[in-house]
Length: 102
Image (tube, helix red, strand yellow):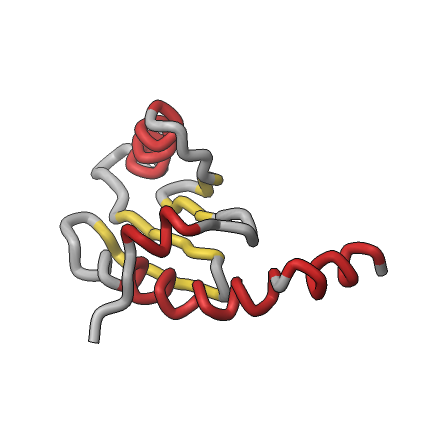
């Protein structure tokens, strides 16, 4: 209950609801990029599925995960898919970089 009270007091759910369309727009924009099979979102979760390399299933996902970690971003890997789960308090920097257009 204390968590729900904190969410309400800090406006977390309103904040997340404002971020979701921005997050979805930029995640889905990856569809059609080279070696990306699919992009899915649910709330502010995102999954990017890569085409497997011939004879090396899972390698693209692992390589992407490694590059992300080297650049300060932690992602979860499942085979040739990465799962993105930003904090609910993802902030103004994200909103500034990914301003919705039109």
